[in-house]
Length: 461
Ligand SMILES: [Ca+2]
Ligand SMILES: [Ca+2]
Ligand SMILES: [Zn+2]
Ligand SMILES: [Zn+2]
Image (cartoon, rainbow, N blue to C red; front, side, top):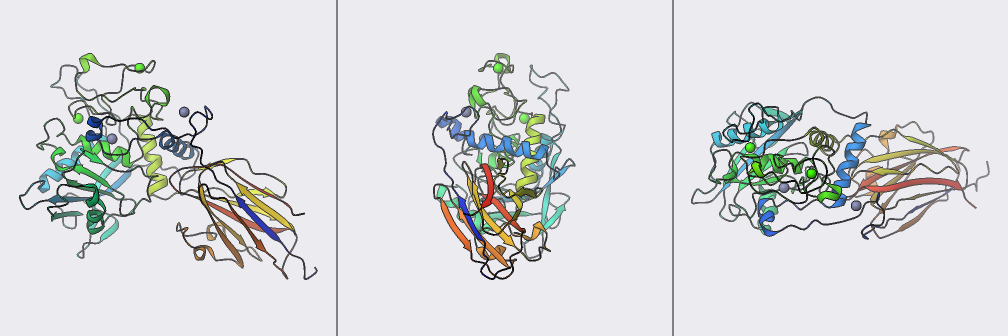
């Protein structure tokens, strides 16, 4: 081997984000479903865009074919925060909170049934068991979360319940949210943090792909008066929290995509717009096909007296989102690739990682391209390659090159939407063999999927 042999890696990653509507009937494009003021007051979670719905569908698709699929009961640890003012508004007792926790478990279990005091309810008409349940998280004597531990009830010793008196946060304005959460939040990415206060909507949260789970913003804010037996007359069965937790678990409103794309869930009928009442005798049917509108579904806007259902499709979507975004099951099989061979296009959900192993030769150029999305990329070249793929990038933190510097040669590229990046690494001398294994890791960042990612390595000329 001559000492001036060298390898040049040229990583080209081009991202661009399509904003045109209707570019392809199968493509992802951004749409925004209009809301009226009344609906905004009902739920303050940002309405799902087509891209949100497509993301949720992609997560389900991945989940169904994933070896990381979790089919056992998912128990979600819960922290409650009660924010009252000096007048005592929003005060909730332990029994109020226990009633809300029990209502949440009923909603997600098989004992959520229609209200038999209403004429339209056939006794014994109940929802499915989602396989998701909720238990109080535990905190230690210092008030810090004990990860994975649960308490038997709201009033049990160590149950994650926090009460504060704060006149600003007790009527939550936009400017108060992060200050309140920064001061109070105890939960990690697996934990459901619920803040009970007074606000302009019945509740709000974020989709799990739209933020980093476990970050300060992650959690649900809900009207304290919506707990079971609360003073909010039309919404006091605790269903508001069940609805917002549905969003927190990745569900859109049943009417989010209208008749055209629905909500991305196969077994909820399409619905043109929200239903706001509880008069099922005149049950609306706003879209062709699928039967009447899903006005009993927790993800519509019906009164609490009406809503009691999740569907199997919704349960699957929630389990998939919790598994990927909150249990952090990101591993994929390593894809083997030969020089001159282009990988099949693949889509990555936010935070998902794919590793390629390529046998390169001297003077090889590798390039990566994607149709849209954001990604961080890593290469690792070891001699000999004794490390496993898991060593490539152990940390989910993709903010610094150092997080992946385990190899003899490692490099890092951050590709951002609309900012094509071209980098050349190389001029390696002295230990080049032929062929040489190169590992390329790609981590989807941002809140949208990486679309049609392809890797190709060819001989450099
Ligand atoms: Ca219909
Ligand atoms: Ca109900
Ligand atoms: Zn479309
Ligand atoms: Zn909502």
